[in-house]
Length: 186
Image (cartoon, rainbow, N blue to C red; front, side, top):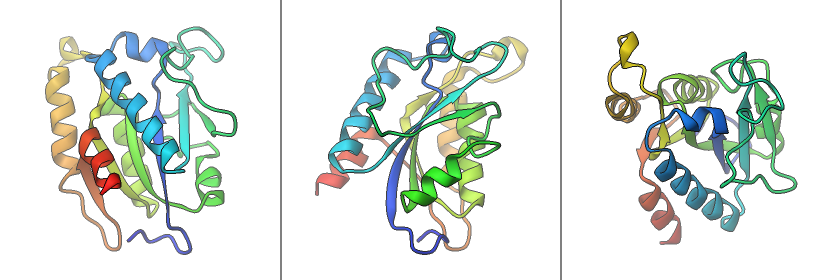
């Protein structure tokens, strides 16, 4: 359905599942476990897995907190995109990676729901991609002391509003890890 011509492939986009990010996020162990399932499923389906790593003052490039969590390992040949903005497309080579692989559909998981996940799914959608947000494979930290809702409400709201996104020639949906994997096996 995407508006991108001559592209029919799907990729898993794993955003910011880094030691420093996941250490302060809720349900990290469960989310990382589901992302492990998604990575295995993607590789079995021969769908590219694309890893995104954020660097900032809090996540210095090449530092321990910047590293992807120990439970997940990019394989040789899998793209790693380095970013400094919330939207994984901004000032990165992500679009080139997706174009070369003929990707029109992104399956998105990672952190943080109300920051880089949200920015990236919107960035992808406005660029013409179909976007599936994996509802139980993204997380965020507790920012309620600064006025944000509790993390579970942030995650729930992100899933809710994304399920209602529409645009001509594109699809946006929300799916659980289990349903995504089961649907591919049918």
